[in-house]
Length: 234
Ligand SMILES: [Zn+2]
Image 1 (tube, protein in one colour):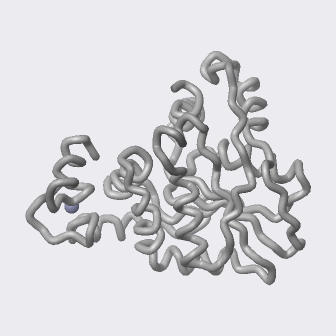
Image 2: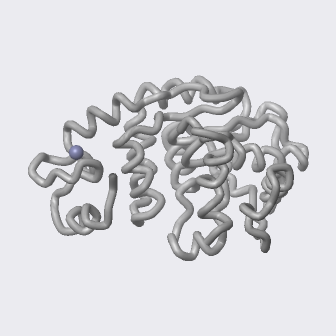
């Protein structure tokens, strides 16, 4: 598991981002063993209807996504995308269209953006656009809520999530153009589903979802709390 101890060693020395080893050569984030483990965590396929993930959640992919989200390492987005290899090829085929492809990042809550300095889903979208061709379209904005999600009933939460995003920038698309909503982790698909809802409400219907990681939800309830805590509880 990634820790601040490992981070400080990483900043001042040659430390593998996943296992913390300081002796082996790095690539530049991982040692050879962890690099091999990352390959075994490749997924590169559909995880749900119209949703694709490049990796399954494993020890190494978890460390890297943690570094991307919490340790000011935006370069990990392109590292993970480029390292997906076969998965990336599958993804290119999966999004193939006669029109253009638009990568729409899930927007970050403004307080999180101020704290982090960048939106990790934008970094993933940019890396995919470079690797696969296509454009990044920051179409959505996140609405802020005054009510903590945990105080709401399950049905109220669903309604709340459904209205969590709004269209902030319109774009004229042709019917063959494809929108791919980009997020870091796919669990139940609640967040990306809410993004798709906001787009569909504005007349955009050709929509798919791609995330770096797929994590099986232990339960919808637990997953919801995990998904939402950084957005609403802080
Ligand atoms: Zn390692």
